[in-house]
Length: 229
Image (cartoon, rainbow, N blue to C red; front, top):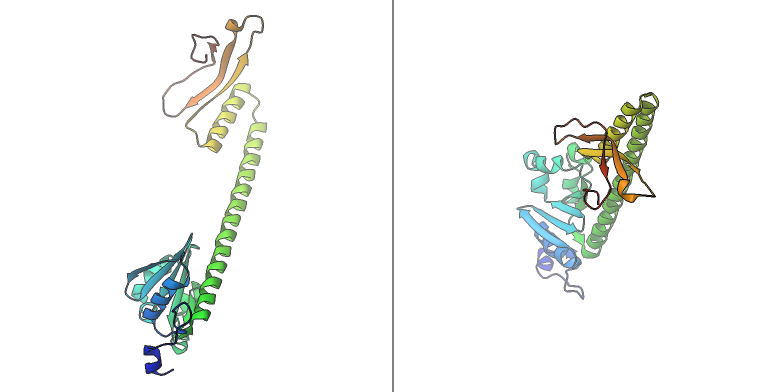
């Protein structure tokens, strides 16, 4: 395509050019492809498309060819919420640094037809969304496995305790660890069906990391005057 043709490109029905020939045009056209896209241009040679929980970051060749400028992006390469795309000509992209290939940076050759660009962005967002869901699923599986292992380990510890008081104390301690609670109690209710005012709540074990105290077993009456109502 001649330079004159690029200056006056043929447009589609949506007033978009048939072809994107530069990084500046890439920014302009990308902002018109989808009304839900949020375009941000934080620096020269860089722009991003925010699509929900995913951010596509496009890098001009003068940026990704500069190792110093690329360091902040490489540090984010393990974050599945980001997808980094290096743009440039076919010849330039063949010289993509190995560090970027190893970090799974994607490439986008320019010039590119608008329909191809739209398809490429759609495919990248879809693939990245699948990766995010897979990562969350793996994390949930790992958390579940860790919880099962923890419960089994606690069960083995409890089976080895014969002293009732120590057993209750250990049960409460492990329950607090699971719930991430700094205090807790194990109690029973001694209910008097014939005379409810004689009913009591008996606290077998009480633990509190915030308040320094050593409490033995104690009870509280269950009536209108007591704190338990």
